[in-house]
Length: 565
Image 1 (cartoon, rainbow, N blue to C red):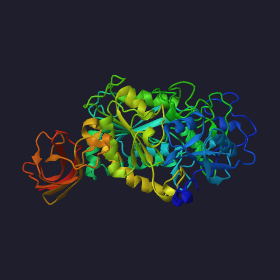
Image 2: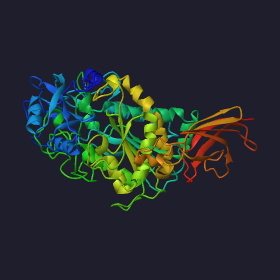
Image 3: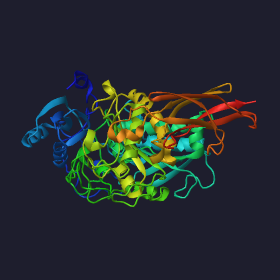
Image 4: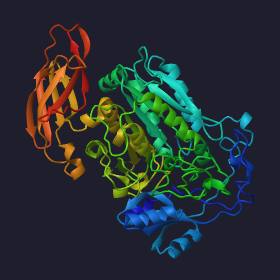
């Protein structure tokens, strides 16, 4: 175990409650609508010392055993070591289960009764802060941000309330962003534009995840009309963003001086759970291989799968909108989605530094495995994260959102686990707010890439990817990532590619296109041409660029500006 990881992992992350000794049970009866079970609890007694254990778990069976027995597995792996959070009793339980574990970090947490919305005992009169812990946004902060953006950019945005959370305090809220035309951003699957759907902070304690949505929303709405790539994306694609998929849970995380480790929603499901052990893991509750590996049936465990498949209101809200905006494009079973399938769904978590693709429930290739692995490899080319299926590089997780949408609708999907070095990495769920910029720089281009391929992700992932296009005067210069990502399923994504064509057009459909002179060198190709703007009106115009390989696969379109006349 590295000294760097020893130094930083969980110094801040679990500095708040994981387990608390409370004087009254939380599960004695269901709370009234709009009331969290925590509001019925008194403050905790003497805090319990909590540890993070490094556990030797070299096999998939070891990881599954840890999950089945209800240990709080943190989203990180260091070789054969997984990480489990808990008190001294958890250490004894690990030993009794036959695991070799060492204390990785020690802290004395305190769990405070949040008393309504983030610490105010009178929620009717509460003014909830927009930020906490140095700049991270509360659930109310994210909701206020959506309203502010929608008010400022009515020509680009539309807000949808998808359904209530368990407590009824919040709507699961989405913002749809595009250059609005007739029929855009409606909950229908026959619209003119493909959809890229981003959801973040399903696990409430993963506070950096929601900030990626916050920054992406601003990047798109502030960049339209000035940033060529943003403008081209919003002219052609609907971008749907759910910044907080678990607002009730985030309320618990954001209370007190330091964040808590609330992972789940706040549905007590009749269990006698207390503190931040209340709730259902929304990323284990979806009706796709529900109840499989990586889940627990104990209501107080952090991977509790819920009383039934897709039981939770937060997930029902997502399933409902997905069924409305995406067409069903896969027959189920071992049938792949067609190469012409449209749409993409990305979920962002923290903090393992990984790109995960279906299937996540088991180490079994998905029917579209070749294309999904190619997309993962393309993502890796931007953020540098380890890439593969969860059982291969982390541990199996059944009932997840990306497996669900791919399984039920054939929509291409993946999960990003944000990661970094020092305080921004390891198992640090609560890094300094400065780490948000680190995560954003690593993943902004990933989000743009996935948005651009949403019109045909299974096809575009194989095509050469134009990484930059610049015009100086009338001269267009292009750089192409020509790696053969179609070999990613075999671990050969860094092999030199076979790009054969680079072309530009003033028409986004490329109905009329002109070639560039192409030079190949290993995994990179360059191309250039003097743009012929004859017949184009004077002023600033968009130029679209794409590349093709010898198999006929086109990569996504890249855009840049040219001034004519």
